[in-house]
Length: 425
Image (cartoon, rainbow, N blue to C red):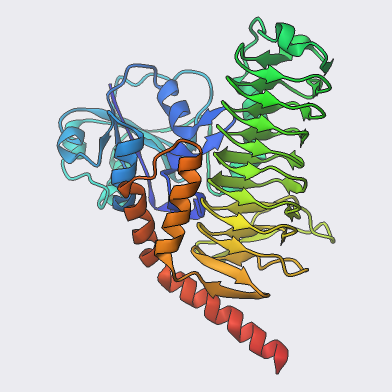
């Protein structure tokens, strides 16, 4: 059976992370949502994607072999269409031999459809197709859950690390000499190529700790399960608290709790990062910290897609888009949404909770980062320092996003200036 991963309109609620990637590339536990979805339906599928046109070229480059927005491929035969926001269970899929629509609430998790249902299906008509299928095809409840907001991924990350864990003989061996283990040894997995220095403490009493290939745990680090350290990442004297996933090639110091870091990001120095989701190529300067709890222990609200959304949670940290940067001593407020390519410098107080893409906080005020050429030059330097090419596909996407988010940037900056004028009146 062919599988097509699709994005519905609600991927916009997963900003700022989904500005620069499809929702199926978001992490939860040890792997991405897309990898989980494909595993749920079994290996060896012919895979396609229906994504926002803005992302099509990037997805084609980062997922070679997938048919991206290829309507001829999509309409050629029966297929399973899978919502990229769906977090499936670890168990394999139920019977898929007949057409059906599997839903969670009113959201389609996946649909098994024939070519006749796909005749007019495209990225532009997908929402209409989903509504039609719900009304005309057999309907069943889907297992798992839908991801509505980024804090849903953060909230469920620890449990997903536990669900992903499969006991196997550990390869820690000599790599573990001089380190201390608290809790069951069979809940620790260390790849044979990883390095654990002496004076590292690993606590598995609350769940598994997994250290992937070529990762390094430097002396004086402490890891508490459930947590996952991705390939090539360095933990540098840090406290990694439960519920944390570090993607590939990160540099992490300080204290990190219940957080997902997409990959290739730096938090090298001290500072607290909690109940957060940080994108790729982010640099958090020394002493950068975020609040994840209001002083009155009240519910946290977050600005998402231009409106304030009540999270229903008392612990929500920050959500930071790709290529954002903070200066040393930056203080992020509870429930902050920091856009891609944002540049934040400390002002001695908490920063605004919403910084739009390509904006900066400078001398206590929001400003537009108008020099896109300079931003792209810096991004190329950053990626090439890690041996990752910065391609014209990346540059074209960022140019398009700069234009795409211009109206949002103008509105937020205008509202910020109006607030400043009211305070000084």
